[in-house]
Length: 360
Image 1: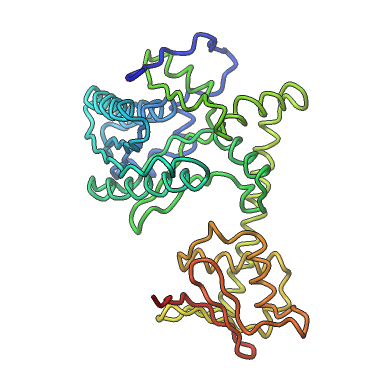
Image 2: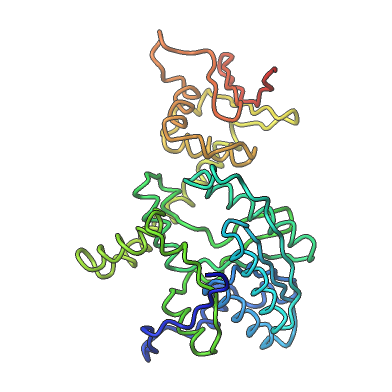
């Protein structure tokens, strides 16, 4: 049904032992002084999480005596027909009620045959962030606030474990993400759970939109949310969420150390040339531990903005072995090709990595 607005969930009751009020949690996570002199664009889908984030930031901005400015952004994915248009209109009405600037962007709708699988989800995410960057730039916003929650973090880490991941993947959703040279995405609700969010919306009598696609068990993340996680809590560990979050925290701490060592390797042995060629002097980098070498190579891809999605684990291993020159004597190739038209060649102790132009 088009235009379905959720009343607040009746099974959520107030809890006297609950954590600090949601606006206070957001302020603890993202202190007001970090953004009060800038414009913040709040990405609002209309769902409970993003609506709660908007209402909290609006409340915090008022308490800060008007320093800083909020604007509201909505990205219409056009994947649910009239419901998508209703969502866009509903968020606009909420923005008007709060007296906030409202900007929106309608994405180009992909063909129905492509609307499935991780590829489609990745396409949507890429298009959404590109749209938010453009909207932030047009609104003069320094920050884009996103409504990811503690539950999203738990689900993301567990989903990556099931799919297969390394230490970097175990760190989960980062609190910030650079969208452009002067625009940073911030996730100030990563310490808040959905139960607290619903309680907050209930307390201020704020409705929100309900996306029925979040209940479809044909979607892997929904099966994890509604099936696997409840089963883990009931049959294995009632505190499994905390255990997963602790794993993510430890992974993040380890990743900081690895990144520092990887950066040291880059500073000593890697040169980024103006022509886009990456040159690696391999005399001593060959002795680096395998995982550290792969971390350094991933950092190169990130710096060069080369595609990483198709660089599966075995591709990183292949690249690291080529750089470290650990292949068997009779199997040592003079070059390898990687996703994204990237060519890696060796000339003695020098490894060159470049994007090649394919001829028609």
